[in-house]
Image (cartoon, rainbow, N blue to C red; front, side):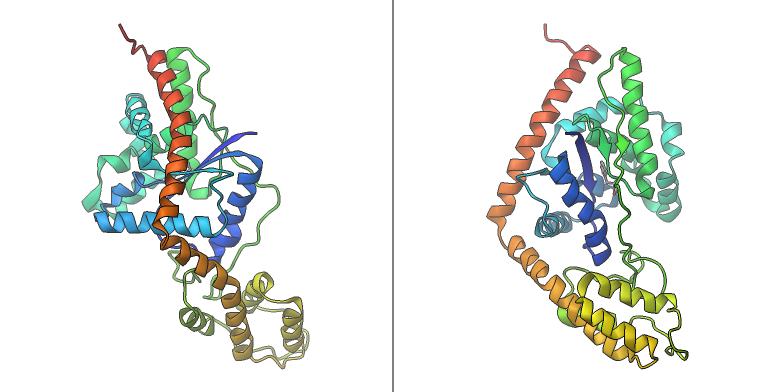
Length: 329
Ligand code: TRP
């Protein structure tokens, strides 16, 4: 069993794209690997949340992941800030992270451009903290999207540099987790492209029935097919892709036939799709709310996770201190 680490930023809510994407992968990983999943709450301080917002978003994201099936019996689920050893490893790694290479990171340059009023040192050293998160458990694999590949590459670099500096083979160089089969890409409701949180085209697991209906009814369509058996343009295909994951086969067939014979009414299709999405997310939404109102359960999950994560982190930091030369008299 390989050790896998993944950090979850406590920002935004899960949408259907996340559910059928990253979440499906997490559920698979937790069955097959020794997984550490944590809420990256130290990282989120770079954006200066208020204490209330910080706590609220950590709770929300934890409840959503648990409701989707992340299992504290299978994986170690914890809050980053509960494992202080991470901050010590971060400090130690900082001594060997060069300002020049950190300044050249794409995500840092992006932040400098987008928020010149808050270019704090935490942003600069974000990849160092992320490396500490990963190598503190000596992870072999990290599931990463395109936007995190460079950060993972830096984690490898910092791990290698430590090994070279102290002439040890202590840290593994963490590799990207490869998922075998390709996942279904969930499209957004705006005609083209996939569902995303910044695109404003998402259906969130916590959207109530009314919100969800409104979003689906506003989805982009066209004026309808004019020729029998014509090929569907992307916006229409997208509605069918959504149906594929939430609707009955017979429902999908019914609307496909209507489309082929040019008798389709997009209003009817959307109404059905909204109903089916609602039926699909309803139990998840209910579970999120149940978990959110159960502080005792959340506390138990967090405590259990912190204990397991600290066990592995403490061992690493102890070894690293020894390798570096901190020795008791
Ligand atoms: N940087 C990641 C993101 O923005 C979150 C993260 C923090 C992370 N530490 C990590 C991911 C360690 C994987 C491993 O999504």
